[in-house]
Amino acid sequence: MLPGEQRLPKAILIPDGTAVNRLFAYLCQQADKKVLHDHAYMLQEIQLQWFSMLRSALQCPRCGGNKLIRKGWRERRLKSSRGTISLVVLQARCKACGRTFRPLNEIIGLPFTMRFTDELVQKSVKLGLQLSFRKSAVIIKKLTNETISAEGLRRKIARLAESLCLPNMVAGQTVLVDSTKVKAGKKQRGASVHLAITAEKGPKQMGRSSIKKNHFTCTLAVSIVFTTR
Ligand SMILES: [Zn+2]
Image 1: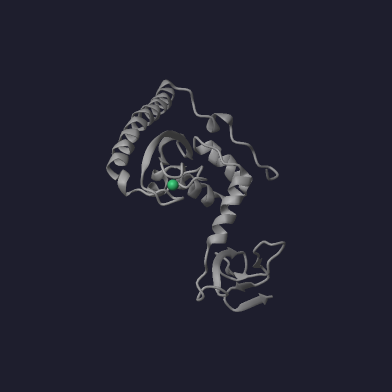
Image 2: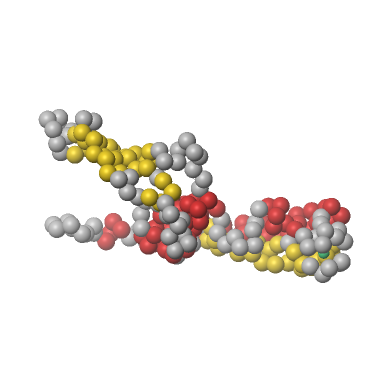
């Protein structure tokens, strides 16, 4: 806190316990539970129908064989903003080589390692790009029904950054610009300071990709330009 700054009264920060708030919290919780329960059954039915219709067209990922039988169900749990969603996925087994696999995974885009829905990842990443990972993790925990660790968020952002591919026309050019007003000059609102950063691929450091950060341009009131390298 800044010197002289006062904390907000607790009454503002803590939601009141009126009956309508408690009622709606309960109804939301129950509605989620019911929808999940109903859809779990429906999704199993759809998978069974789908499997019996397409069985001959499906192929074993190991040997390419197409003689497949059902081999029970596997539970998958995904974290979303509304909480952890459980989904059972149909398993199939190849009669020729015995390989067990989940043909639905590929069709609906559910990789074996997926633990979070993309919407929760996107929300977390948006926060993580503006706040510290630790603070972002705290906010996600407060505003959604799910948690993501600060380290988990850092890894997700790093993975996304790795996959970014800057087109040649952008690489080496100014890619981020921000500006603000400062108390300077004769104008009442002050003078503008523009900040531009150029992203350029740096050398590998300890096997990790790096970005050259020493390209910095600052323009004050348009007329004075500082550039450092
Ligand atoms: Zn096979």
